[in-house]
Amino acid sequence: MTARLVASRSAISCISGGVDSVTTAYYVNKVLKPNKHLLIFCDYKQRTYSYEEFCIKKISKELRVPLKIIDLRWLGDISTSVLTHPEKEIPETKEQDLWNAAKARDRILRWWDPCRNAILLLVGLAHAESFYISKHQRHDVYIGIRRETPVAMKDNTPEFLEEMNRLAEQATHHGGYRLMAPLITYDKDRVVKLGDELGVPWEYTYSCYSGGGFTKWRGERLPVHCGKCSNCKRRKLAFTEAGIKDPSIYAS
Image (cartoon, rainbow, N blue to C red; front, top):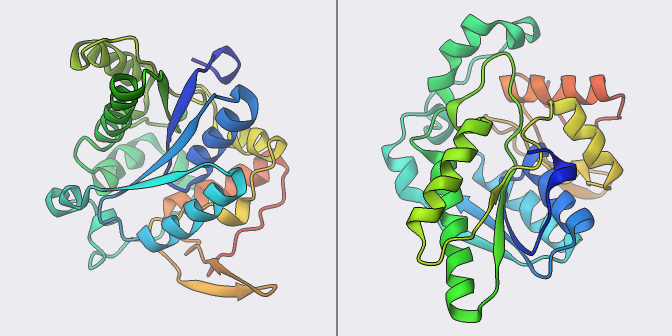
């Protein structure tokens, strides 16, 4: 499902603070203009939680959309991902390795948290059903997954989204809820172009897997990207390919 095909009622946006989820939230808010809009951010003990929380609170304020933070720290307790184990070292990814399918497949379990995207969507769906039961308000649930290359994680695909929508019909009393990923067919450079058109403040987005601390920049406290992990490399490349200035702060 592409961005231009999506229609909205009220909306819940699952947001992580990254380029994709923040652009999705801006698209929902500024293009679809839902009757009501709620941002949901989940704490699953990710090592970059403080940076993501900082950015998401800024985005909530910029969009004037309420934010709800959900405690999923138990997910971090059972995960083997380096994202939830700060004692594990995150190696540097070479730019040419971003397009190596074999190496990409080898990296997947390094970042994989059990059932994460399914859980995030179900958290959003539970809120949507609650709003309908208690207030008779229909909410669609949005998630910022996009097309991944050269190898997609299974929970970042149109097939995953289709299955989750089927589950939503059986998992709720009334049915009729929609789980949406407007950017599912977009490459990351196209997401950056869309976000820039929508006025996303990129300095309040965070993509790093490792975390580089905070620094003062032009009088403002901002988070720092490590510049070495695969997500930082992909972020840098997306801005370059989109022809848009990257205001992010990188440690390297």
